[in-house]
Each structure stands twice: as C-alpha cells, then as structure tokens.
Amino acid sequence: MEILKERERNILLYIIEDYINHAEPVSSRSIAKGMMNRWSSATIRNVMVDLEKMGFLYKPHAASGRVPTNKAFRYYIDRLKYSEFPRKKEVMALEGMLKPRYHYIEEVMVDASRTLAAISRYTSIVVEPKIDTMLFKEIEFVKMSKNNILVVFVTSAGTVHTRYVDAGEHLDMDFLMTMKMYLNKRFEGIPFYALKWELEKDLEHDKTRFNVILSKIKDSIETILEAKDKREIYIDGTSKIMGFPEFADIESLKELFKALEKKEKLLRLLDKCLKEEGINVILGIESDIKEMKNVSIITSTYKITDKSLGILGVIGPIRMDYSRIIPIVNYTAKTVSDIIRTM
Image 1 (cartoon, rainbow, N blue to C red):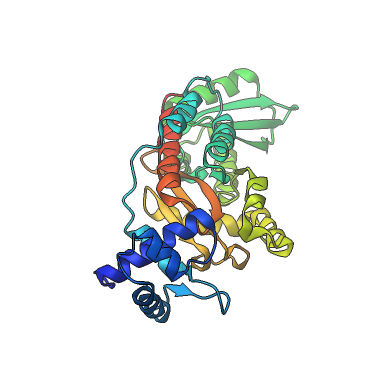
Image 2 (image 1 turned 120 degrees about the horizontal axis):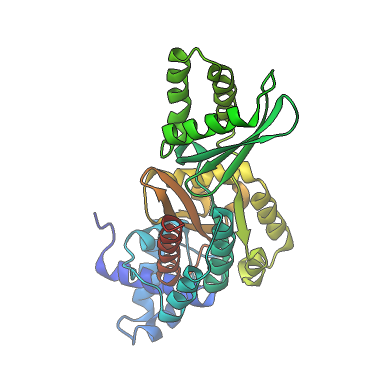
C-alpha cells in the first residue's frame, strides 16, 4: 500500500537519488532547481518537514539540508524497478569468467569475488553453500599406515572434505577399492544430509566386514555435518570502502573491518538471505551486527543444485547506486550457477 502522496513521493525519490550521487545533505533550493521549479522552495520545505516527521529524512546540521534515513532507502528499494542485465561492459567482464576451465569450486569462488569487487567497485563477498545440502559425488581412500586411512569425500561441486579413520585392523587396497566402488555406485547424487541415514540403513542389514568401515565412514560424515556452518567466506576489495566519505572516520572504518573478520556473525546474517532465492538487501540497522549499521549488503543466491544454495553480494555505503549494483549482483549469481552446473 502506498503511504506517501505523489508530491511527497517525488520529492523523497529526488532527495534519495541526489544523495546517492553526491553524499551531501539536499536542500529545498537544489530540489526546486533540479525539478525545474515544479514546486517552490517554500512548498518543498514544508513537504521535507512532513517527511522528516514520518521518519524518512533527518537534518544532520542546523543549517544544512536533509539526508534520507534507513526507512527512506527501504521505501526506495522496495519500489525500485531495476534491469535484469547490467551494462554491456559489466556483462562482458562477467562472461569472461566463463572462459577459464575450473576444476574446483574454490577457484570459482575466488574468481567470482575478485570480479564482483572489480566491476561493482565495492567490497564483495561470496559464501560457499552448506555441506549438508551438497550432493555426494565420490569417496577415495588413502592408506596412511597399516590401520589408518585418510577418507576423502568429494561433492558434486568439487569441494573436498577429509577425515582420518583408524580402521582398527589392517585393510588391504583390494578391500578398500571394492568398498570405494560400492559406495560410489550406491550413493552418488545423494545429499550429504541423507547420506548418514542411508549408511545407517546399510549398517542394519550388512553384517560383513564392510560393517566396520561403514560405521567409521558414518561417524566421519557426522563430524562433517556438525561443522556445516563453518564455511569459507571469500571477501575481496575491502580497501574500496575506504574511498567513501561515510568512512572517513578511522574508528568507524576499524569497526567495520572487525565485523568482516567475525565470520560466524557474518554467516548468521547472510544465512537469513537463503530463506528466499534471488536478490535481498540488508540495510544498516536491519543488520544485527552493530558495527555494520552504516553499510548496506546486497546479496543474491547462486545454485549448485535445486536445494543447494550459496550467497554472494557486495557491501557498501547505504547510499549505494542500487539500480546499477542489483543487476550486477544478480547476473554474477546467475553466471556462478551456470559455471558450477557445467563443471
């Protein structure tokens, strides 16, 4: 439901876009001039007072113009009609990612983070999906000693997880090869969260020598799933944020950098964006990380499978140019999804 009258809406949108471009309080005189004297400065001042009372604007200094609040930016973003595609040169830069042949998902994450930071000119962030939603591709066994084995789990996206297992007995390579062939054929394409259950079913029915090693593998999978929230975060372009006037204060900048180092808190915040596919914008005080109250995060989900989603996006000042950045983030997510599907 529209909460503003047409005149209020037009003036508020003008103020927001002017503030995005110049990072300075906006005066009634500059609005009147910019809007070709559609309304007088006095009329605009009255509207600005009303918008301030409604919580859309605030006056940082006694003699200055007004600045949009978080509420104003939320109003603006919720009604923003943005293009599906970025500008041509940005599309070309992203499509350049499709040329290299990637072998591991980590390479895609690093490249996506670097490319997104470069073309957005903001700090980029890429988070790998949770292991429990990834699909099992294969298992490998590496003998480390007579009884000790390194178990290597590989997901369909190419991520690798290793665990050491004490078999409690000598297992020859022929036995391990047979075990490997059985597991790969039996479980390929099964999500990791379901893998544990399927192994439990096998353990109930299997009373052969396989049973011992199956039990050890099930235990290994449990430890992997327990650590599902400890994912890798790829951040690039942190220095870019230093160029914005909002972060001229060194203490504010230090606080933000500290927040980016607290990966567990950052993951909890970003995981909220997994509830819905597509673009999500977290504005300043909407974040539960107080050190990030002066930044905005634009994210989108990328897909490994229909149920396995990762997050990527950019972090910048609240006055980001959303109409330019949202299509970039959206297209980057689509590109990453396309790359992973063809790996």
